[in-house]
Image 1 (spheres, helix red, strand yellow):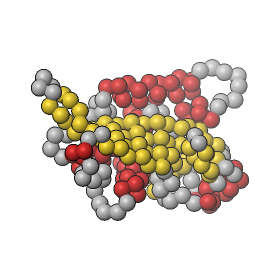
Image 2 (image 1 turned 135 degrees about the vertical axis):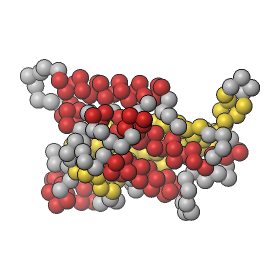
Image 3 (image 1 turned 30 degrees about the vertical axis):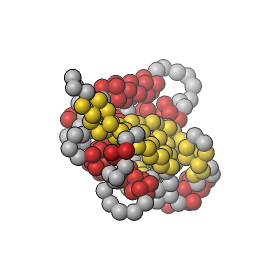
Image 4 (image 1 turned 120 degrees about the vertical axis):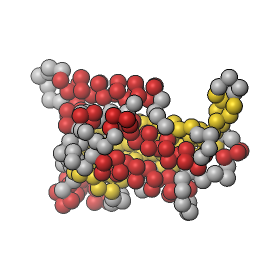
Length: 231
């Protein structure tokens, strides 16, 4: 499945905004977001954390109530967290020549705290100590996952087609500098007439694509199937 045109335009617009901020002439020190806009993840060691995220799931159609959100057995919210973390890590692993991804669980030694606007830095000294001990450059923390499923209408006959929408809220922490440099929303949508059980994983992968699409220089990284992924 492809991302919707609006998602693509939104991602490219976000990328352009960050790049624009990074090249504007100024006599002042750059803000954290501007610095991240120039650096991105290229050549960095990036840690992905998803086990601390909030999860909200909703079905708008009774026909989907018995369809699992993601494959596997266990608590649905936990499975969604695991799937989201895996998707983020796999994207990074596909681009392993550009940055070193690592998937970990949340640890108090990270010095992070959870607030109403997502994970942020709680103790700078603790965070910098964690960065030195683990050789970490960035921590990508998944704040929240929203999943919505339903039956849409398409075509002249208005036949109902199952769909899933996934929205991710992500914090990017500069571990060595000790601050949050970005809070990024990302959305994905998938539709299928034959495999409703695959809708959420596909929509989640597309939302992760959207997150990485907004990173600086991502289109030049030469990741596997990068051209097709962003069509």
